[in-house]
Length: 221
Image (cartoon, rainbow, N blue to C red; front, side, top):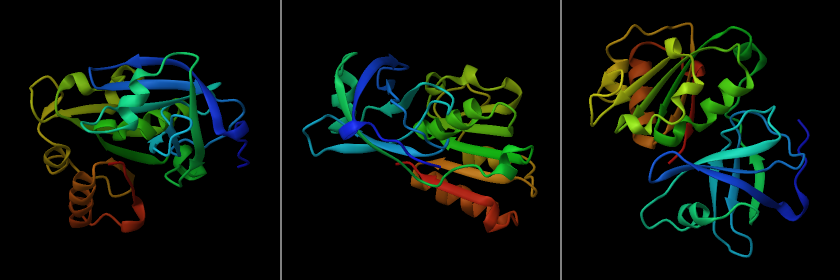
């Protein structure tokens, strides 16, 4: 796929949408840049050396780009981006990455998406880019308020696992949930989120005799 970058990689911020006190979606102009759902960009303020990598949150058909950002204690870029105003400039590089769906995965193949926290971002892009996907999405968070834009997913395909309250579909971690449901050996598994979750889920799937070639992972933080 050809990649058309913005001039000098400087883009305008269109708006910021706050989902919780610490998590927000920042929308920037696309300006002709093409990407594949599942890829990421590097984003920061112009004139600084600090950038961070964020999976693209929006669908491929949109005329803008969105990223899902969680403000990190002691973080530099996440705090700077949270304060940025519409019309201000940001510096972007990309897109990068190979955490994408092939034609076979897009055309009815069974897909299981497992995300922790803001690791749900590439799956939001997958679902918005390819509405006919045959997917199940399992999202692990601490509190139900962190079910970012859960209305974007078919409720029959979405399970929210909450580890610190009882307001989700399942009380516990993704790993707890996964050990208590039948595992589909014909599906492809896509994992995105913190490294501990990915390592634990990978081990669970391997123990269930899931072929390693069917497990795809993106360590998000």
